[in-house]
Image 1 (cartoon, rainbow, N blue to C red):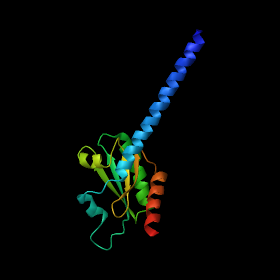
Image 2 (image 1 turned 30 degrees about the vertical axis):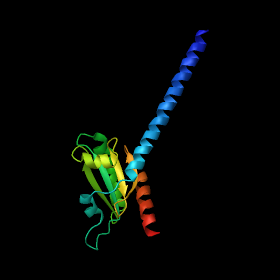
Image 3 (image 1 turned 180 degrees about the horizontal axis):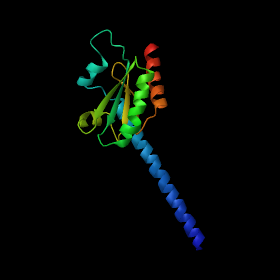
Image 4 (image 1 turned 90 degrees about the vertical axis):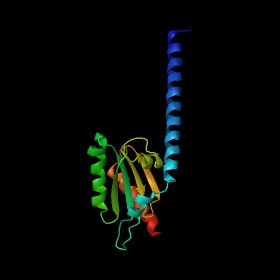
Amino acid sequence: MPEITVRLIILLLIGVAVWLLVAFGRRFVDGRRQRALSATLPAPLSRIANPDDATGKTRVHILAFSLPDCHQCHRMQAPALQRVVEARSNVVSVIDIDTASSSELAQRYQVLTVPTTVVLDAAGQPHAVNYGFANTKRLLEQVDEVLAKGTS
């Protein structure tokens, strides 16, 4: 068999292997995301999501999972979250969560990596889960979807 044919077959096999790896990886992450979206808010955070006073205007909460030594969390995700709060200050709150010290909460929301953000409605039900960095535009779109659902 000519050498070029062997190389093409090897290249084809590598391509198929990479395609399968990506397909199974996406399926795995989608499964984890679906489990996270079906999670319920634990009691300590449910008080934050449902304030006792009638003046609480916050209708969207963002759980921001990070670690102290995560550079992407502090240099990229934190400023993006700050811009979301500035843009929708009267209806959005960000709850910073140290993933290492809140492992039960991280497990409940299927946190695979940091940063991870979970967008919750006023009742504490998850609406979106973002594994890795989520930019301001994406977070604002998710917040606006939650707000649109709440008004309809």
